[in-house]
Image 1 (cartoon, helix red, strand yellow):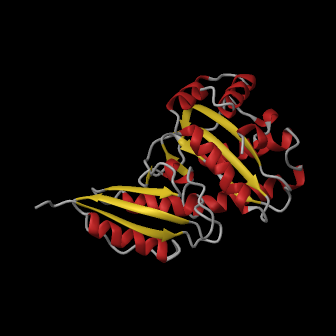
Image 2 (cartoon, one colour):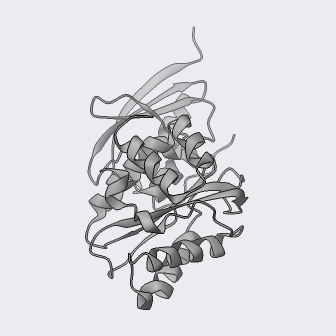
Length: 100
Length: 156
């Protein structure tokens, strides 16, 4: 039995201006609250570290682009839930409180 | 998008004297004005807009880098300048560290795609440790410009 599972889910960038610095910051700040490795992939490019704003900026993900979110680690389920919700919320609502 | 497509060469500041966020932003916008990238009449409005954006959250994104920016109707094409602060600027960065490399962007409101592509270009090069190291070692406008050109040509 393993306490770690890889979760993958498609997420859509709803932000009108795409994944510019503010959404990137929101994603990285939330991802950093989790121990799990969090990565985002656009098309077939190499995945980037979602805890790094620079990495996220390098995706140049425009509005309505679809990304694959991959979470791997001990708190992966919870991380996936919160990060998906952040994308769903269009990065506008404050993320739910996360117990570290 | 290449760095040299939007960085105004004459506005590069290899030795930024400022050590606070507002003075750093003011120096960089003034440099864009002096280089002819923006009109003098728009300078204060652009500074105010950038400072207002910073209130929404610092653009000090960690790793000693800040990307202050705004949209402004006075520009028809995205322009930027680069500043290097050897002593570091207190930018209220996310990681709490002082900022040594600043890219300041002013983009036309109707071209969000260009803004994303410029951010992609900047971030792609800043992920390269050698680029950051060489940039911080550059002491003249020409040295910075040469480095940006090398980065554009993937020579670093």
